[in-house]
Length: 153
Image (cartoon, rainbow, N blue to C red):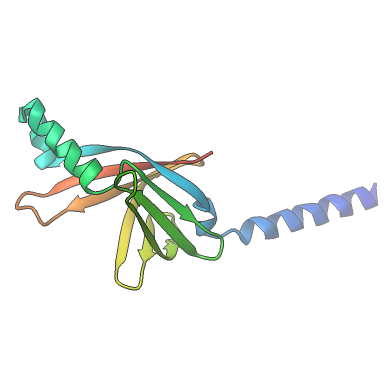
């Protein structure tokens, strides 16, 4: 019985060490593909119900196609690098590479390339999807969108 308790104690100790060694980046490792977006009910978004249907379609085209989101995937690698692939047509593929990091509290994903840095405030994170907030502050009236990526199988 004594050796069984020692074995159980050692096993629990090793499990706790493995759990404590996990990094916030581990939650993101893998390939994610664009799943959709939602306009927040603030700023311009609070006027959604007043916007004619054809204008909403133009906004949809601007966000999904203009931003290249509808055909994008992001791969986060264990070495702290990422690669985003955006398909803007049959023969047009844009590949962005850089480093990424995640805040310890999982509240923000940070992307860094040689030219730019981008902070992605995380709204929701599960094992199968994550949603981040993107604010379009260049407009006279603020416009906030939540963009969701799902884990690619």
